[in-house]
Length: 421
Ligand code: LLP
Image (cartoon, rainbow, N blue to C red; front, side):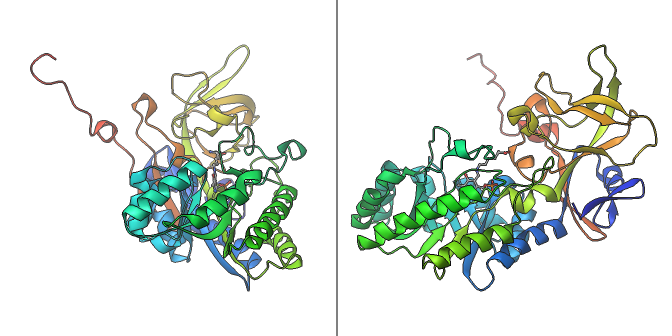
């Protein structure tokens, strides 16, 4: 990671030693590199040079306001999955007209809210949702712009490198139902068909499933347009993977050169494109700094107990995901093998297993690749306040989220009334 690297013995993020940030703000602490996000975004922009594209950052990956503001300033729109995410976009100064709304369970209230805000497109995920969206739009005297999320049925078995994706799938409309669903949509007074959408999974590290999905989607567009329904934009979703542990995903520009070559060859290269990248824009821009509380040697395992836990970084506990763990200050000592675990009262509360580390109590470690799906998936389990967050650019650091206090975590809770219930 070019923006997160050692200079001598010290880990730096851009031009700042990470240990100085830990000193100033305490731990656990998420730190993000703005240059890293910028260069991840630039790779997509290069890939689409000369094309009509709207990049809609999938904000579920990390929805902290300052990051949203950064992406909004770069011209990005947002892929949202709730009314709450829409409120975040607006609070960060994002443009509702660049927002697309995905998700299988949109409520009527969320549909209303999004129509009022004037979003770009609803990615409709079922025939039932289409009918409800039509009702809501008609009642508001408007039309909802939609694309239908189609499930292109790319066989995940032939592509085992898709770590999340198409298994027994609640997402999207089956390929075989897509044309009929578009015909229904075209007949509904509260619906305006604008595009087609697909998203085939996450942490994809090979171009092949994208190319296969593209062929299936383009076949569908041909069939839908032959039925007299115009498809103005093609939304290819997100899903491009990052390097956690020697993974070798294609670069965003390489992937899109390949995909756009296919679009050109089939005569679709001049369409409007939308994409919904999340992890690949922020994942490797972030790290989580944690302090070693105790070393606990054992007969079978040595434990390195740190002050970050599964509530801060749920991916290892939830998916047995690998995140690199490195010291902020390298020690020239014989390392030992540890399980790096947090203070939460669960055996599943681990951040890394069998890691070779030279550490002392009080040392600081960085959990790497922690920009995506860490803070946004964090919780208050064990009444642990959420970590603070800092954004770094060059020599500057800016606190973008205060550490949550215990009182913050129970704000909104009510004690019993004076009289017994
Ligand atoms: N669009 C849709 C409709 C999605 O469902 C997702 C992610 C994205 C875009 C963004 O995908 P990305 O570019 O980030 O791969 N919590 C899991 C990942 C869940 C992904 C959910 N959908 C993890 O930590 O690995």
